[in-house]
Length: 312
Figure (cartoon, rainbow, N blue to C red):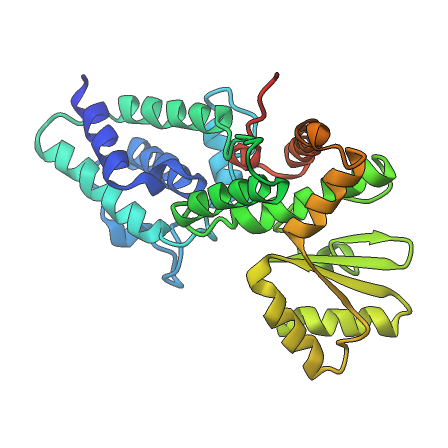
């Protein structure tokens, strides 16, 4: 194996975050810098003046590199700038390149080819998989999907897989109940204020907020919804229910806002659409996840948010 390729494989094995969106952006940007300016590189020259980000890690710069290799898909809307740990990854990669240079075995073209291959693999990947167990409850099967997303989130350098997943699962449920086109879908990272939204979804006068971590800001949004004549609903994970109740209680909104457990919310819908026939629950859950995958493809740039669903 080419020494440069071998070193990069070792680097990714030691630090899996290199294969996440932020790490891939770092690899592409630093490799391009090495091609343009030559080696050795000094890590301190690749840090912004503010000291918090890697130089040239914006979406435009990354997409330009990808375009030169025939890739049009967006790797990361923020180019990896908002991912935690990118500075550390940059320093590790610079050290690896300088080490290869010192051994007179560095091959920058091979390094770029390696990163491009990993980008292709990233786009081809899927995240959690539906392993429907008929011996378990529907709730337990949904819990398994969220656990897989939580495991992926731990190694994702700041990517909030669980939050994105529950937002789009709720959106998929709404599409199945109301029909596609009745609610608007947005990327998980798109803030409400950027689109003048009252919440994540709105159906007539009902505003739905989906979150893993209820906050004071969310409670205030609910208060604003009520003042505007709207009915807010908060959908969160089980661990978030006590916090949501406490925050709303502090604003005297306990009896004016519905708070639901997202897994229970989805489970009830699956039983309803299966006419409460347990034999049909797997088919209904598969339909929900197929719609979820379609929404993710439309609204997100990270393909690992998609759920692998068996064809049978």
